[in-house]
Amino acid sequence: MRKPDFATSSLGLLVTAVILLQAAAIFAGPTLPYHPASGGRQGMPAATATAMQAPQAGAVMTAAKIRHPGALPRVRLFTGAVDAPLPGTVTSVRRSHEARQLFDRAGYDLEAVRAGESDVPRLYLAQVPNDLRKLREVEERKSIFIKTVLPLILRVNEEIAEDRSRLLSLDARLKAGAVPGPAELRWLHSLAVAYGLEATEDDILPDLAALLLRVDEIPVALALAQSIEESGWGTSRFAREGNALYGQYAWRESAGLKPIGSGADTAHVVRSFDRVIDAAAAYSLNLNTHPAYRDFRAARAKLRAAGKPLDAEALAGHLLRYSERGTDYVRTLRIIIRANRLDELQQASLASGMVVAAAEEAPARRGES
Image 1 (cartoon, rainbow, N blue to C red):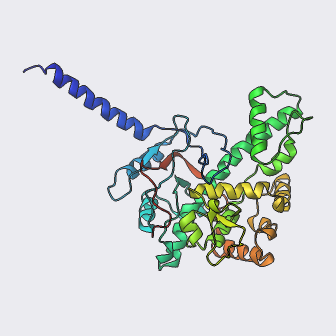
Image 2 (tube, rainbow, N blue to C red):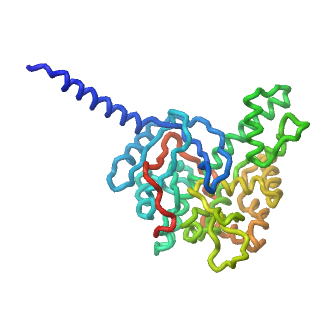
Image 3 (cartoon, helix red, strand yellow):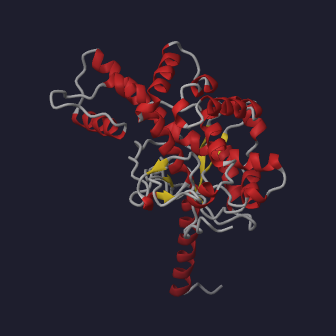
C-alpha cells in the first residue's frame, strides 16, 4: 500500500482538528451570568458573575437534540465551562411557530413545571414573538408568552439570589467579628451603588440591613402577572417594538416610545430595551429601589423573617402606586394570577447545564411584523 504523502497527512490532521474544535464549541462554553448590555438604552449595573453547575448527562442530550434540526434557527449551545458574559439570546426566534418548535424540542412543558416534574429550560429569547396578536387560539398565545418570559424572570431572580446569599454570608461574618477584605469591600460598595445605597463619608460599609431589604427576589407569579397586564400578553406596540413588558417610564425621548395620541407636551415615554431580559431586570430593580415601593419591600422582608414563601397576591397589594388605577390595578393582578394559575409557577427553577444563546446574526427590527 502506498504511504500517504506529506500534503495528504497534513490535510487529514487539519480536518481532524477542525472537527474537534467544533465539538468543543458545542459541548463546552462560558458560564452564563446575565449582564445588561452596555450603552444605548440600558444603564443597568451588571450582576455578579458566578459559575453554573456542570451539565447533567440528560441536559447535554437535550442540547444535542436542539442543535441539529434544520427547521430550527441557528443557535450555539453552552454548558458552563468557562467564565464569560451571556453572549446574547435567541435573536433569530421572531415568530410564534419558531418559538413553539424550540420549546417543543427542549421538552418545555408548563404543566410539568407546575407539577414540579420538570425544570424550566434555559431558553432566553431576545424578544417576545412579534406575531402573538395574530394567533387565534388564546391559550396558545398565553402559553408561548409565559414560556418566553418565565426563564428570563427566573434568571434575573437567580442572580439576585446569588447576591443575596453572598450578602447574608458576609453580614453573618461581620457580626461575628470578621473584617472584610479589599475585594469584599469593592463588591459590597458596587452592590450598594447598584441598588441606590451609598456609604457616607463616615462609614466604611454601606448599611447592610438596608441593602438586604433591597437585594431580594420578585415573586415569579407577580412578575408574570405584571408583564401580562402591562403588555397585553406581549401584543402591545411597546412590547413588539421596544421589548417593554412592564410599562416603565423614561423622561428622555430617545429612551423609549411615545404613546400614540400623546401631545407634544407629554413629558414621558415608555422605556424601550434591546432585549426582553433587560426589561425584566429593570422592572426588578425598580421594585427593589424606588421609594414608591418601600412598603412592598418591607412586607417582603416580614415574610422572609417569618420563614414564609413570597406570596404574590399579598405583595401585589403594596403596588398601589405602580398604576394610576390603584386598587383596581391590584385587583386585576390578583385575577390574572388566579385565572392563569401563576402561583403554581412560583417554585419553578431553571434547569442546570443547558443554555441556548444567540446565533451570530443581527437582531431583526422590533417593528417587523
